[in-house]
Length: 389
Image (cartoon, rainbow, N blue to C red; front, side, top):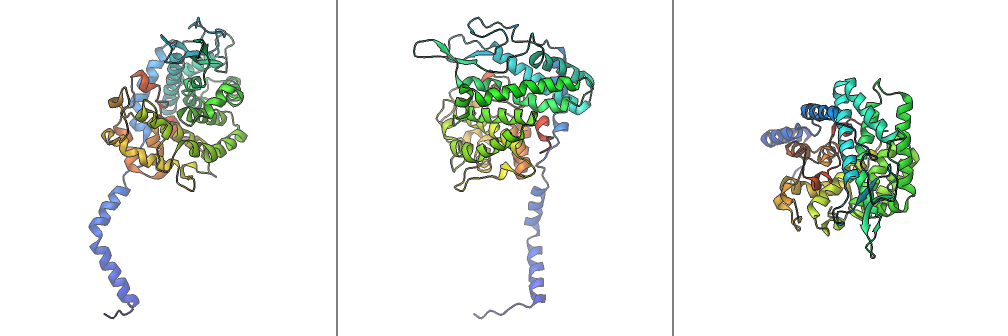
C-alpha cells in the first residue's frame, strides 16, 4: 500500500477529527486535573484547631522539675527517659514533651487562623517556662534519655532517646507564627531561639546524637528533621546547606532502596507503622530543606531512590492497608493508617490530588500511645504555609 504525504489542510482536518473523537476521554482527564492537590487546610481543620487550642488554654504547664526522675543521674531540669524494654519504664518527661508540643502547635495554628492574642499569650507562657525561665527550663541536651539496660543490667543512655524530642520540630514551626504577636518581646523570641540553637549544637556534637544520626531508619530521619527544623528557626544557613547535602548523599542511599521501601523498617516488629513513620519524617525534612533554589522533593539518585518513589510505593498501602505485602505489625496494625502530613505535602509537591483526598479521609487525632509517638505532626497548617528561603 502506498502512503502519500498529507497536505497542511488535510493534517489539520485529521487532527480536529481526532480531538472530537477523543472528547469524552479528554473530559474525564480534565475533571481529574481540576481535583485539588492543595486543599484549604485552614478551612478543613478550622474547628479541630480551635478545639485543641481551647483545651490548651485551660491546661497547666507541666515542667521537668515538677516530674522528678528518681533514677536519673542528672539534675531536675535534665530530660530523662527509659527504653520501653525497661520494666515499668519512666515516661513522664517524654509525655510532657509530647503534651507541650501538641499544645504549642495548636495555639500557634489557632493564632494563625484568628490572630487572637489569648492564644499567643498561652503559648508565650508555655515557651518561656520550658525554654527561658532559669528555674524551669529544660537543659538543652538528652544526656540522660533513652536509658536502656546494658550487659551488666545497668541503665545507660541510648541514641534512641533523640526520638523523644522529635515533637519539638513542630514547636519550631509554630514559633515564627507566634512571634508576630504583640505579647512577645523581641528579647523573649531571641531567648527561645537561643535555647534551640544550644540544642542544635548538642545534636551536632554529642556522641549519642551522632549515633542516632547514623542509623539507617527512623532514628536517623528524626535527627535530620529536628536538625533541619532548628536550623531554620535559628537561621543557620550553613547547617541547612550541610543537611541538604547529607540528605542527597547519605540519607537516601542509607534508607531507601530502588523500589521505594525502607529495608530497616521492614525488619522491625512494626514494619507498617515504622515505614509510614519514616516516610512522615523524611517528607517533613524534605519540605524544610527545600528552597527556592533547590527542590529536594524532585531529587533522586541515579539508580532510583528518592522521596517521589517512596511516596508512590506507600500510597496504595495507606489507601488499602490490606494490600500491605509484608508482615503485619505485632500490635495496632488495624489502627493504621492515620492522617499523615506526608500525604498532604507530597500532594502539593507532586500535584497529586489523590494524595490530598486520602489525607482528608484519615484520622487526624489518634489516641493510642504507640501510634501517637509515631505521629510527629499534629497541625499541618503550620507546615503548608511556610515560605521557602
